[in-house]
Image (cartoon, rainbow, N blue to C red; front, side):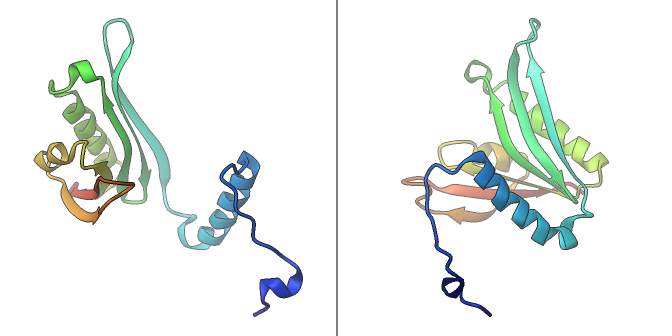
Length: 146
């Protein structure tokens, strides 16, 4: 194996990468992963609640990746929390994912967010990151959809 320093390369670190630089990294990783995961079904999923004026009052965004629903964001308007909107959004996304062949759901939440809410809906903690990003815990939870 050739040492990268022997071929006159250097390492650059930046806190302001360009979209083009991010795309180079993303495409390089996708190229590496494709022989292993290129055939796996993948699609975005979103569902919303809205009021009579069409204003969004809550939403869920995630991704179906193979047999998993991966919830990335779940939001309910602060004035409507506790009325079942979050549960409805999550349960409907789970049902949709089940129809697409998913057998499980993965999501994460911070200690100041919604861990008890997810546990009440059958999610189980799989991993905890302590002091992440600072002074809080980040919980990774899963739920069987079968």
